[in-house]
Every structure is written in structure tokens, then in C-alpha cells.
Amino acid sequence: MRDERKTKPQLIKELCAARRQIAKLQMREKVLRRRHEELERREMERTAALEEANAALRAEVGERQRVEEALRAAEQDYRGIFEHIPIGIYRSSIEGKQIRANPALVKLNGYSSEEEMLPAVNDIATEWYVDPHRRKEFQRVLEQEGSVTNFESEIYRHKTRERIWIAENARLVRAPDGAPLYYEGTVQDITERKRAEEERQQLQAQLFQKQKLEALGTLAGGIAHDFNNILSVISGYTELAAGTAPVGSLVWRNLQRVLESSRRAKALVQQILAFSQPSRGENRVIQLQPLVEETLQFLRASLSKTIDIRCELHCPTETILADPTKLQQVLMNLCVNAAQAMERSSGILTIGLRTVAISKTQPQLSVILPPGVYFELTVSDTGCGMPPEMIERIFEPFFTTKAVGEGSGMGLAIVHSVVHSYRGAIAVQSQPGQGSTFSVYLPMHKSALTHGPNAARPAADSSPASALSTYGRKPWKVRRQSSHGADSGHR
Image (cartoon, rainbow, N blue to C red; front, side, top):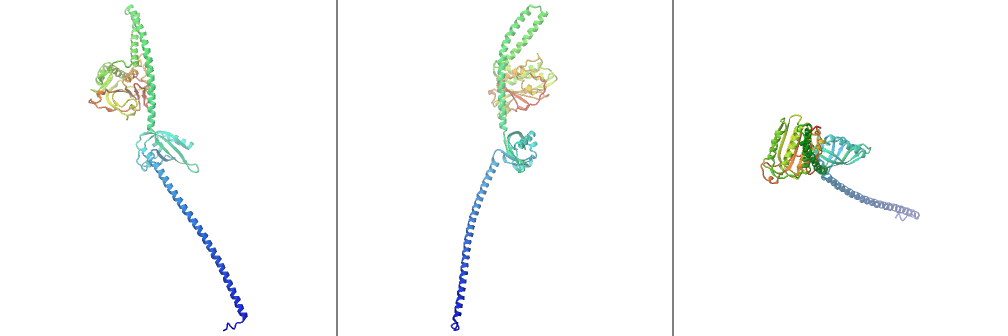
């Protein structure tokens, strides 16, 4: 009832206050609405940004996973290459320590694992290279060029000390400031290739020598025939003249010297003809040991008593298809040369005979002889030996170290020619002051291959100090030859 008693001005005043209050509330509501809308807008923007960031993060994670998978695959690929490639791969220090080695390099050095090999290698230059200067040359090229290609060296298999040939491809890895850090590269075993190259060179040399000896034989044969005709005239007229001169007179004695020289010249002509025409004679199946024993009986009576002749004969029944006269000539010439090498002092002459089996596993002999069973006839002396330059020429016609008139130089040339005609070979071993050994290889007759008391033994390859000759081919010189004395009795 009190409200009803309010005055009109009061009512108007309250109404205005209420309207102002309502206006304020509306204003606040409007501000709140705008703020709410702003917050919603910002929330939407933030949500969109977060969704975009999340998408980018998911893409980055996926890309990283793909990269990691690619890296793992690449690592597996390179690890597979490193582990399974048949070429050695390594990393080594500048000082000569092995840092890393793949299984191929480990195997090349004779070890079973990298863990076994790395601690064992302390100095590559002295422990790996046969010639330590090759390591210095290797380092010099890398220092100058930064890399090296097909650097060939002879090395040792580190564990077994077997000598092999390798080819290296390597680079020098440097730090950002240019300081050398280490070497890394590959190693390939080229031993078989080197042997093939050596065999090819030997075969080429054999072909050259064969052609040279054939030319010499043809020339010598032609000259010998002509010279023999001239000697016949000289001898005939000299005999006629001697028949007219008083026996014992000066003229008669001089003519006798001419006749003696003519006979010596005829003997030389026969030697030349024997060299140039080795096929003369009749081949038949004979037992070789009895023939050697018969020849040695004659030699014992003719050689100096200061020479001790020893025999080691082990082929009593085995046979060969050959001319016995020519085989005796071969043995006689070899023994006479051996005796002459010991003429300044007493010595031992050893003649050996055995059967040997030659196979492809013996490269030095199998290069020039087909695999099979052979007689090995050896003549050894304790004389003065031969220098390498003499070994290269001893089978050449007319080559001799004797004084003029003491040797014709045809003895070993005839041996060469005869053995050539039987498809054989000769190994010559000699050391200065330690004598010489001639080993003649002659093919055994087929009828003797399947029976006989003595089984063929594998033939030992010639030692490094040797020269190997095949007849029908050129004397084959083994790559390394030791030095020999300059004075020799061989002719």
C-alpha cells in the first residue's frame, strides 16, 4: 500500500534507474558475447593450428621412419657387400696398424676372423710386404695423388707367410683441416694372373729359342755338308801327298798333322750333323737302366780316378722307346761335362735314375711337359757351378767356356737336340762353388706304364736356382736364378 502512495516523480525516477540497469546488463551481455565469440574464434584457430601441427608431425615421423628403414636397408646392403664380396676391404692407420678388415681380407691373410687378425698386425710395411719399400712407395703415391689404382705388390699371407701377389686400390682419408687420418681401400689376389703372365712369357721365350735353334740347325747342317766335302778333298790330297813323301821326314810329319786336324774337323762335322738332323737312328723299346749301367762301365775306365762315381738307379725293368746310341751320347756328354767341371780337384759324380709322375699341380714342369710318367735321369757334380748368364746359353751350338781347341761347344747342344726329339725336358740347377745338376725327363714307353716294380713318384719342381729346357721348345728359364761362379767346365 506504501507503493501506491509513491509519488509520480519517484516512480519515474525508479523507472529510469531500472532502464539504466537494464542497459548496463545488455551492454555487459553484448561484451560477454563478443568475448565469447572471440574465444571461440581463437579456439577454432588454435585447434586448426594444432591439427595442422599434428599432421605435419605425423608426416615428419613417417618420413623419419622411412629414412631410418632406408638407412637400415642400405646398412644391410653395404654390410652384405663388406661381408660377402670376394675382394678384401680394409682400413689401416698411417702408422701401419690394421683398423678394419672384411672376411675376404681376413681369409687372404690366413686368419679365421677379424678379431683374430687385427691384434696380430702391428706393422704392415715389415710384416705384410715382401719388400717394405713398396709400402713407402704406396704411401708416397697416396700423399701426392690422394688415391692409387692397381698398385701391385708381392706380400706374405700374414699368418702362414706364404708369398702371393696382390693389386690394391686405395685412398687417403683426411680431416677437415687436411691432416691425414687413415687409408681405406681394396685388395685383390692376382697370384694366378701373375703365374699365367709368367707362363705366357716363358712360352714366348720357348718359341723364340725354338725358332733360333731351328735356324741354327738348318744353317749348321748346310755348312757342315759343304765343309765335309771340302775336308774330303783336303784329306784325299793330303794322303796322296803323304804317300809320296819319305816316312819320318819333315814334310811327312807336317802332312800327318794336316790329316790329324782333318780327322778332328770331320768329327766336329759329324757332331754338327747330329745336332741338325737328330731324327737319324732307329728307335726301339729298350730298358733304360741296363743301358745306363753299360755306359757307366765305360765312363769308369775313361774318367779321372780322382772322381768318385756314384749311382742311384731305381728302374731295373722300365722301358723307353729310343735309339740307345743317342741315349748313350746324352749320358756321355753330360758326364764328360760334369767331369770337366771337377778337373781342377777331386769330386763326386752322381748318376740317378727313377720314374716320376708329372701333373698339372707342378706348374714349372707341366708348362712344358704334358702330364704323364717320365724317366728322370740326373747327372750331378760337385764342381764349380755356373753363373746365370751361362745357364741361359749352355744349350746353344758352339757356346763353350773352354780355351780355343779344347772344346767345340756342341756337347750340350747335341743333348738338347736328342732330348727334343723324344719330347723331353732338362732342368738345370747350379750354385756358385756347389756344382751343377742336370735332370733329363724322358717319357716312359706306354707298355711300361701299367706294370713294373717301381711306381712312379711325383716329380719335384725345379728349385728357384734353375733353368728348364724343353726340347722342341726353348730352354725355359725359371724367374729367379741365383748367382753362379764364372768359371765352369760345362760346354
